[in-house]
Image (cartoon, rainbow, N blue to C red):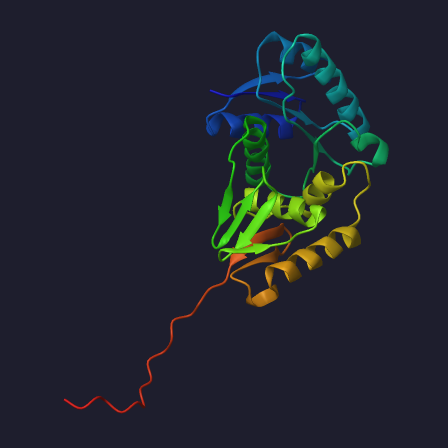
Length: 238
């Protein structure tokens, strides 16, 4: 059973804690951010969510938590800050992922948490989505069995998308993971998405990157429509 700490009060923190319990997680809930470090040190946790803090406060709390865990010889754990505003360059330092509240629903937040937990565990060694394969350890990508050469940023972007397994990932999440020390810039992300789509083969590729309105970006497989029967064809001779 995985333990997740949720620090924050209010309806949003309560809803997230309830959803985590429904999905099978054990939850340590603390109302005050100052209690988060003590809570993480009181028992082993696999992850932490900081809800309703400013980006700067969340980053500071994350650094304190990591320092406390390190002093006790415990491993670092994934931490997510659910904030009302996007972080600036200074606030992003020290926290692996910011989640802008209102950008998506709790299902996507849960999917991102699961992806971070799998990554922390070192699994899986190889991702697959349709005809697309990605090996994080060897930094290799293949499509229909053919190797594809990607630049480092394109590879990281594809890795984030393939971990979501077809679920839309909000642009703020993608950008925050690719450039944690820089403010969100839609144009910067759009350039990398354009390059990645071109490397995969564009709209005709068996696996492509599609935009899901108001939700983000997701991998999708190309649908091949069955051929319609030719009703005008001459029937074979008996």
